[in-house]
Length: 311
Ligand code: CUA
Image (tube, rainbow, N blue to C red; front, side, top):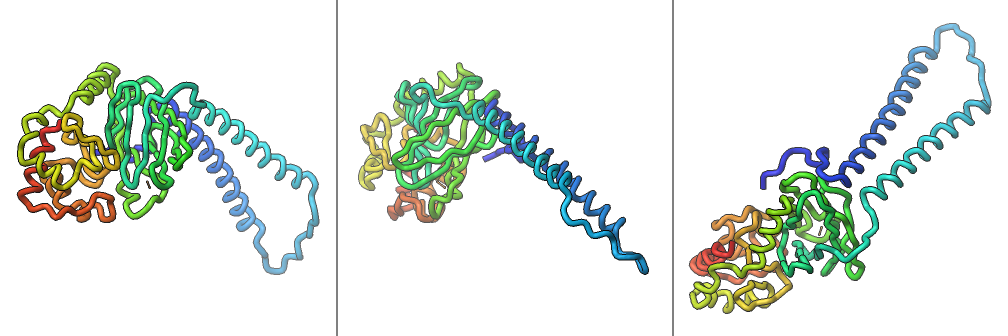
């Protein structure tokens, strides 16, 4: 997974731009305050130190003007930051005003993405068109998770039984790394996803491509791979359009080979890694819900060959 350094500091959406602007402003205010405090302490240390033979300095108890000043100035700063924050909140996180374009369900430890209007289902890769705010409804299938794409906007919790909404938008085509930002169990760290922003035309053709059943499925349907797929009950958890399997406990695998990673960012999606994953997912992502089916090397490779056809 090739992601540029420090993406957090390169906002790629109006929402993230507003948040980064607020962060920079608050940081600047804090830096000025820090400089004033350091300068004042430095002045006192150098200028007012005890000198041999000097008399006891004048002792002052209470100073109304100073006290008013050091109450009023911080209050003004806090009120200013409050106003700025309220403004950024309304621009970076406006209320949902329509049905969602995309429903993302967080699972231990992967992401299901459904496009209700188009009837498309994907996993761990969220495609969006550029230049258009996409309304995402975020749900959780089990525990509390948190969706965060630093370059595109705020964090938001996925709470079981309480859907939340967030706007995802990207100015430029690109691949933006997202992660779960709330500790949710053993593989919280391997609960990543990609937001792939494409031009509206490319997005439309991606949708069209996702609507197709996996191309080679019919050819292999009678083959060894399908037997393995059924023998090991893969379809109890996974859907593959074209194979009449519709399990939803695990990721939809119709276009698995077209994805960049396996196991929600656990490893790159290469034929070797896929065979390793099928052989024993627990070796790559210990604790994940996919069990070790004790496949032989041959079975793992047959199944991997089958999935390589599901672009
Ligand atoms: Cu899901 Cu952390």
